[in-house]
Image 1 (cartoon, rainbow, N blue to C red):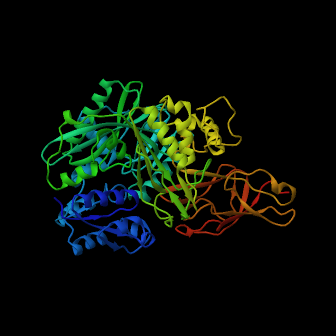
Image 2: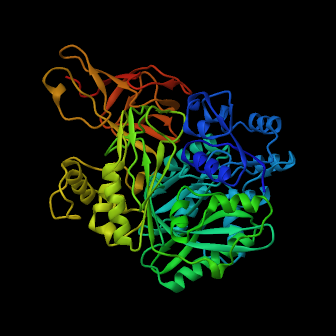
Image 3: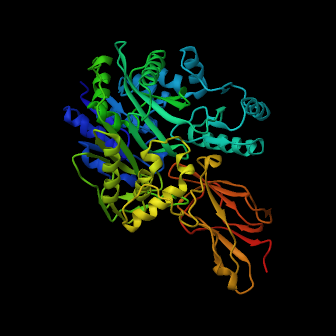
Length: 590
């Protein structure tokens, strides 16, 4: 068994790994950035080592810094959790070369699946069903646009080296293609150092169904059944459940067998997830995540297994504890990701001090938390505070348990999404398992009704015929995946200044009759691209600038014609909420 384990992650997954490893008698150390100096995972670890910077590149992504800490402390294994360096083949190889065990698959397996284009080729050779698309090396814009036309819109543009919902855009028409491609390339270069893309047919009513696989170093590989992760926003999962509702048994078996073929074809070891799109009784390979997934607790709940313990045992050279025939599934489990974010329509990341946090308790509930009262949510990392998981004999009972738990959750000091998630659960469409990746957009009106009832304390009738909340729109439909949009509307001084405005709009007005306006930052973040300069004229819908905050790209667009008077920020600037970014004069100023 591993003796000394260095955990190089943060939040709930770091806490989970530390607790499981310590229960196995393993000496555990953690790392932390200055922003995480007093984070929960640093208190749980037997030792905690400081990293130099707050930005991910200066802390949890700094390979040399982490390897030096591991060597100095005498670690014989490193667990990367998920995110950060968990799917970095260069890091896995560097860990192996240092004589330290990487808790995860080998570097070659990570590299094979790390390139989405190469993964598609490998999976096709392994006989795994594939979507039509383009996975080639040539990246000429004209060639890619022609490939999209051949496949037929809508298509999905995807970063070759992407993951975690980054570097994705749905393109519905030829006129959108060039701007969407540029955005995916920019985001991919910034996040993964690789701007190559692939494209494939976008299924408008597809479900996201994935198979948990596990392999050891002794040629054993099994699957641990499936999960449905279809409820997503910007291709990031919000609610996950196991098993996937409504699948025929022969489909479950076929997907499980395909996932095992996928893993064995690349000599896999450890935990992994093979993701599929499912529509009309058919399934298609999406990608393989060569790590533990955020949603692994629902699999643990229906199998009674500890996947982190399995990871540590496999990394210690042991064989898998069970064969495929031994892995039964029982009951139902549903997980909700609790994020620090504002409400509809924009779902902005929320940062600041958590003045109080009380997680609900119950026999049917599991809480995987990385934050507590007194912690501070930083702009430098993602917005997930923790996960609530409910399990029960039936799906209906699990939904009800989770719905009540979300209502009992208490968080003050920052905004969070618990009410919204509860409203999703309360809709009749979710309860009837009418799931697909466009669920939130299709049912936004019903969710709005459920949200209003939930906040008023009324019993949820699960999607009555009442009218939706006026003005409530998710604002992030399938045609604008992942890149958040803030639509900017100028306000004029005087009587017109009280006119209705969109969320995060332009702020500040001049004296009577003046039309000069100030664009201020809606949240803390980094300016990554500025589209305009002083003196430019802009039209409604034109991008003004792009911010990055908490692992998301946020595009600020104009919703009225205007002239840019001044730009008060530069690329790579770190900005704070309400910081002045631009001043302009509206074209129809009085």
